Length: 376
Image 1 (tube, rainbow, N blue to C red):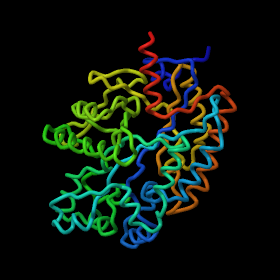
Image 2 (image 1 turned 45 degrees about the vertical axis):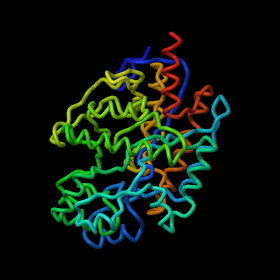
Image 3 (image 1 turned 135 degrees about the vertical axis):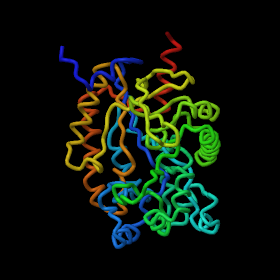
């Protein structure tokens, strides 16, 4: 028997299955990032190095063209049950309304459904029609990522303080800068839930409740799985999630729990696949990764296949993390020219190596785990 390595260890505890289940979890759908190629060039002209951060360099709301290309790859394979590959599209439901926020002097926050953001963009014409087509074809299964990919309090605080890069991004109708692109930014506001203060938890509860309700109105069903932006949340948020119908928590083996108001984090190392936590939520645990946009020099296909094999060796679902940024070509077509063929090779290699593979979405995996427990 092969030696047990460090990367085997997080696959050993928890729920086990003999089925070769594959889940593809993809975050950030619905959220604005880099609005356009013109905005990207405007940032560079201001000396803000968005070219250094892959999310600022490539990521954007998916166009109809992006989605059609992605669906072509997903539909290029079938599993042992005759189903195409399915992507769990973890979506935020809203984006900021910049004009209204500016009119308030940065004192009040206003947001709109991401479908309205799409409708106001000529380059995203027909994009949500593709969402619907992908859902109907069983290729695209949205789940909840939050209301927006943004810590509202911290963002408004930075705007009120006049932080130059944050204001420059606001003027270009975005917020998605990091310290990699703009070292002057002192607040990190991409994490929507990165505080453990009581008053913030109460606010977050309102936010997830509103986000879950809007999710149901947009997609016509309730999300039952959730992934926090930047993988960071307090366990005190979880009762709010359960009241919204959430049953399953996506994430890595180590949950990041904020200390105070983002004054640091601690790692809660109990997120093994299939484990139920004290709030009754079941962890799904990502154990494989396909992120070629952020790791351009790595062999992401072989690396992901290696981790799929480890997952199957220990009786776990292969839960692949692959962010939206990998599938967006509207800012730079070279991004998808590289990544989509690699994604296709990954899917083809899986069905060839494991002919009994089954493609399922995150909520389906959670249901399989729950049903398995009830039969015991």
